[in-house]
Length: 119
Image 1 (cartoon, rainbow, N blue to C red):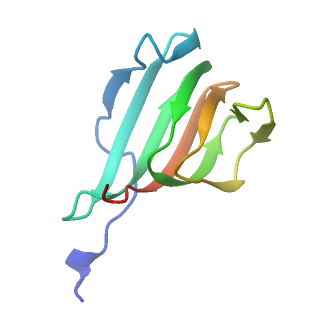
Image 2: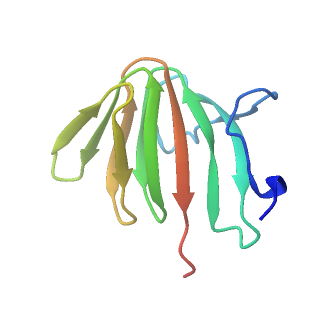
């Protein structure tokens, strides 16, 4: 292995910007920013930063995602109404199959590592 196999996870470049789709957005403006730092050759594994302003959206995870909030607070609520909140430096994993809502309670910046299994 050489240093070309090492990837820094920074926000030193301009982010990709997006808008949460209208059918998913439940509240807030829905603007997001993405700094993808690495994607493997298979296209199944991705790592980087994601940011949003305060908002609430419907989610249906087909991927497994490790999240570490760098700033802000977020709440995940499942379809049965069970809710869990997370804050800065509190790592958590969202397993494929989770359906419910993601709510950025305030502006959020997170590091993500996503693995999307082959169908």
